[in-house]
Length: 133
Length: 135
Image (cartoon, rainbow over all chains, first blue to last red; front, side, top):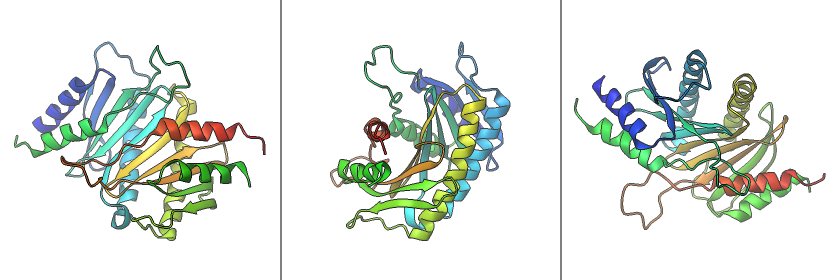
């Protein structure tokens, strides 16, 4: 349990554009979550829970193709206002992150959203999973 | 050549890491596709078709969420695996673009690799450009 609290704290500290982070169990049920102070929900928590459950099912579907594509690393669903990231964790759990995706004020051309540093996020996940709590 | 066939050719020309492109309908049927001859990763066509069916269902759900919640326009979905990245982009109400990009680490990578960077802005600008074409 401490491990996942630590993971959520590190993800929230990593970047201010992270609005919400949560860990689900192997059925997609929300176990722990963290929300940034001063950030209001765009989506009610009940809808986020159903999105997490659906995302967990998507990873179960992807598992059948792992022979050809390799193990799953992460998924990003990009909407014009937010990006939703899911990362399968080692024990069937899943990390869910919601990131602000609104264009920067100085964007002149059409904006397709913020760049998410997935390498950094995955290295945080790997670091926390390697720790003994 | 339809504008969507042009889209597939433009994507294949844009980046040699793109191994496969397809346009599917809302039932997951492949309407057009292109395959790079020398791609290292080979996903069997039945597996690609099965994935496209799943992705079509998932995108219908995502677009319903977009309508019911205040998330803004649904733009794209990336599923990243060790060997490839699978990108899907809804083109209009009836068509879905699917792209497989090679995700194997480059030879010169010294530290641990989490896969290759995909320039989604470039891919989305190609999609938007082709969508301005008259049929």
